Structures are given as C-alpha cells and as structure tokens.
Image 1 (cartoon, rainbow, N blue to C red):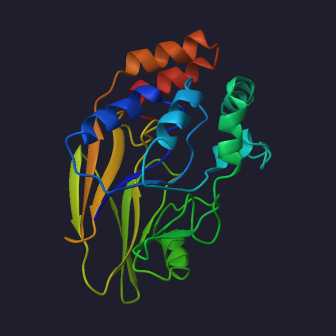
Image 2 (image 1 turned 180 degrees about the vertical axis):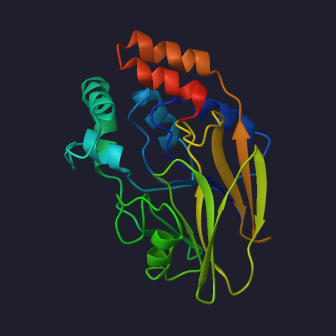
Amino acid sequence: MRYLIFTDIHGNLEAFNALLKFIQKKKIDHFVCLGDLVGYGASPNDTIQKVRSLRPLSIIRGNHDKAVSEFDSIETFNPIAAASIFWTKKKILRKNAEFLGHLKKGPQIVNDQFTICHGAPFDEDYYIFGEFDAAEAFDYLKLPLCFFGHTHFPFVYTKRDATVEGTFLEGNSNEVKLEKGATYLINPGSVGQPRDRNPRAAFAIYDSDLHVIKFFRLEYDIDDAQEKILKANLPPALAERLSLGI
C-alpha cells in the first residue's frame, strides 16, 4: 500500500491545495494526518473540510487542534500562536470544531503497519529534538516504524541495536529505504508551516510493499496565503515567516 503521510497544515489552504494537486498523479491507498490542521493560517474551515473528504483517512489530533476545540489551554503557547488560536475559535464552524474535538489522541497504530503520533509516543505534546529525545521515544514503540509531527522539521531517527542516529533531510526530495532489524522515527516535515528555512510544503509517501519512504517539497502560492493572513488581521509575523520557512 501507498500511504500519504502529512502533518501540521496549520490552516494553510494554499499549501494543502498544492499537495492535493500533486497527488492526483500519484497512487495513494491511504491518507494519514498527524495533526495540527489549524492554527497560524487563515483558512481553518476549508482546510478541515478538505482533510475530512479524504478516504480512507487515519488522523490524530495536534496541540493546536486541542486548543481550538477547547480540550487544552493556551498557557504554553507564545503570544502569536495564542492570538491565532483565539482568531480560529471565532471563525471555525461548529461542525469543524466538533470534528477537531473528536480526533483521537496519539499514539495510534495504522493497519498494523506503523505507529502515528503528533509529538512523541509517550506524550502527544512533547517535541522530539535530537537523538536523546528519540532514544526515549523508541522505548515506547511496539512496531519498527513511527511517524510523528509537531517539530515542523523533516527528520529521520534510526535505531540500530542500541545506537540512535538522527538525519535532517535537506533539499526538496529524499528517499529512505527501511532496513530490516532497524527501528525508525520519521517526521515528514510540515505542510503549511515549515521551520527548516525551506518554505516549500513538506510531506511523504510510504510504500509499505517496497519499504521505501519518499519525501517531497512543493512550491505553493505563498503570496495568497500571506495576503489572507494579513486581511484577517492575524499577527503579520505569521505571514512573514511563510516566505522564510521559519
């Protein structure tokens, strides 16, 4: 099967539309979303509705999804992120807020093939930054492959025996062949809010038959996404960062 793995859209409809257009020419058997459909961007309703239309879909919640659906406080959010949460709460349709409120908490197992979580398998809000964090996360995995989001960085952590190695995925296309006997924690990067100084939308396709994961970066209409943010009177920094990938 071929799985589309994506995460952290953050209300960036322009980036998500670029992804959806790209996969029209790809064979996708199953869609997998690792959370944070909303927050930061100015198109929460359209983004949620397009994600909901994907079939079959496995999806878990992110911290912004929780905050918007009032399952979590915003005390840990910086002022700009908090402002976007308040704005999204005012703009989101009830049916979409209810959808977010019913999203499952990670970790979850998809088709007995791999695990998905937003932050870490032991804490959905925890950031995996570096081999030390990854080493702790590996102890909680029941399967040799786990996809996670939250950090907005495309990264592969590999555990061989007792050694954990982290690899940052640079450039606009990468491919990883899964090794027998190794265990993996993989972040496909963020669709709508990249933080690795590459502003292109990030996602991955996992072929479970070939045991290969391909990583992609796509150009999208950043100007339109920025214009929507500014017209919505969201913090200007949310628009500025899109073109910088930070």
